[in-house]
Image 1: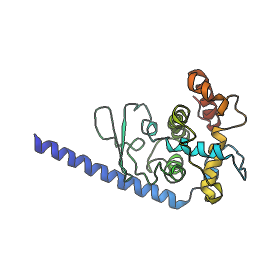
Image 2 (image 1 turned 135 degrees about the vertical axis):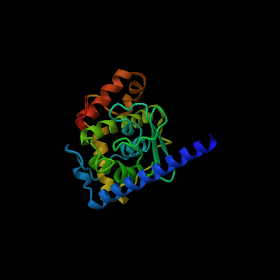
Image 3 (image 1 turned 30 degrees about the horizontal axis):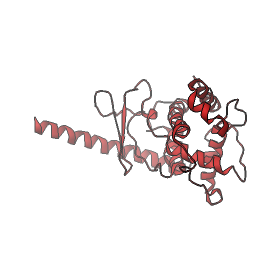
Length: 230
């Protein structure tokens, strides 16, 4: 019985390494093809020369807590559990404890770290949104984007419930690469859109914290801008 259990673990580990290798190759190839982050989304957004410093810090904070969770629960697999190693390896298990190997929810290799959330978006999330997890991933861009917004929701709520001025690191915008600036432009538009009827501003934080319906009205505006509100 012990030998069988050990062999089962070995087989699972071998499967994981194979999946990581395949996904890593696919994602690296996608990155090499060149991703124009400015054309990732269809909506237009402003590119201020000197963006609001506090808003930049909030964007960074929210993305640092937008963990890859729901994006591995697509197409009804809501009970999948995601495990990520510090070295970037990732595995997803279904409700029965079996390793998920389908092409849309499988564990993917993470090139970026949440310690550098803007870079993580550039090297992990944006390529996945555009190309999927593997070459035969059947999900659409909009489908993937919808599930990403569910993870973004967690990041936003983390800021509303846990964020403070002490936790918001300063962003030196002038020293960022063009692609990093582009990510900030995108999420400044998504999070602080001037056309929203409910805004993520200091005066609204308490109500967003206390009133669930009010918060969801704010969040649905984000999904509408992304074009994925159901």
